[in-house]
Image (tube, rainbow, N blue to C red):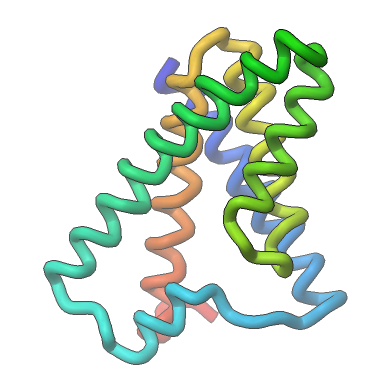
Length: 149
């Protein structure tokens, strides 16, 4: 299941990156809020460790338990897996309160839903979410000190 999660995470990261780049090309938008923290030098070592733990562990576990472990099966029981996948992905994207990144977040939520349904477990979704978040955070951190442009 870990392998499934990592493969799913790579697919999600690629999809989100592509959609985000396409949207940025069509509608130039703001930087990611975390990027501003790194650029301002406002993050010390303790805060960095806590940020990485929150992004790579706390957020994936809590969000996947709620969205894929509770909400998706409850909605699936009532409206079927296909409708539940779309509704849960919409709620997942809306919960992030970022209208500019809504479409990529919806796509990621949908992919996480399908992965959880296929595996009949949230474990691959947790690992995929952690991979996606951690990869994004590392790349934002590297780009903030001029490593990638």
